[in-house]
Image (cartoon, rainbow, N blue to C red; front, side):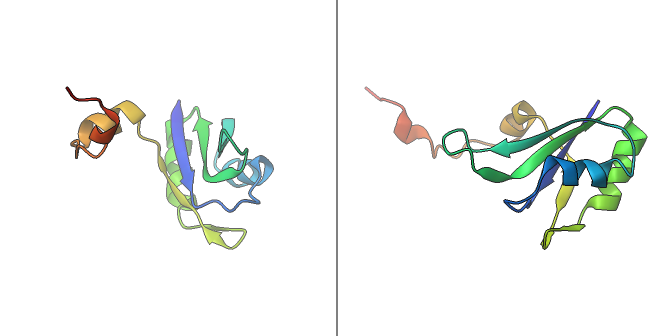
Length: 101
């Protein structure tokens, strides 16, 4: 299963629009439009899962930069949050949340 990140989505982007774009390149297993948990407003990104790796790679290379509702999409393979956190050195910016004695 390949998880694909789609960024720079407009607030009017729909699952149906994304499905029609990605289905041209292969089978789409799931689409998740990311919304703010408090307001329910779109956050401008989505995740799509495709089972076939070759189809997913074709979709990524073909759709990156595609214009949807007046915006150029950013499309790439999603990185796991855990891998991203361990790869990025801590700047200590969140230390203000920790209590020190």
